[in-house]
Image 1 (cartoon, rainbow, N blue to C red):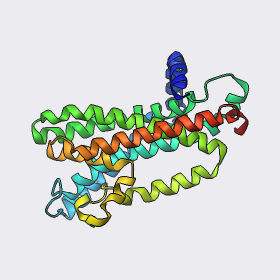
Image 2 (cartoon, helix red, strand yellow):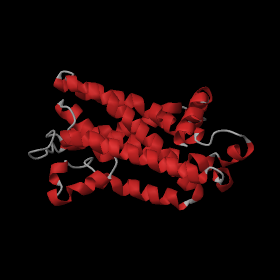
Image 3 (cartoon, rainbow, N blue to C red):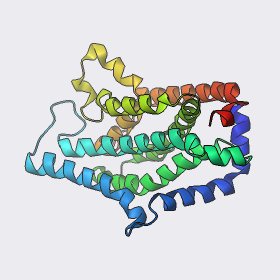
Length: 264
């Protein structure tokens, strides 16, 4: 079922691209700065981390951390987390928002979660590029950076799978939106975004791997802060979350095939 939907989306790729561009432009229609608003909050957040933690307080992390500068550490984890949360949230609500359109037009339902996640990814892509350009020179553009595009592509795929699965669940049960929003608010504290994994009690460190972004954040930290190839748990964790998302989405699509539009 999932493979069939992927083939349908591929045949509709031109329409998907048009809808994606319209989604980005409509999001900031009527504003003087337009799409530039999408970059204001992330950039100001990153600047605040650097100014407060690295310049004003000059805070430092302890032994075992991938870097000593607290602000630099927070920026590497926070920006991918913001991209993940934005893509997941927009993808989750996309089917409910498109309910009226789907009831009147015979369009592939998955077109809308894919459009939402793709639009979010296009907005955050320049920010991720700036992050790479800011940190990579510290390690003279280490050869390990060839793994970075792979991690970014896998993160986009993660958001696509889970954003679509949550969109189907939200169509069936609106409480899904509230539950996931709460989980995202707390999830950042159960990941190595705010603190190195080594600071977490060793006996409970496995809990962090229940957060899908732990694998990606750990990978970005290794690449950008140390210029090192991500350890094998990063790849295993990432593939496990991708496989789980694919299986879940396939099950949801099979069970909602004849009811999805009615739920909207």
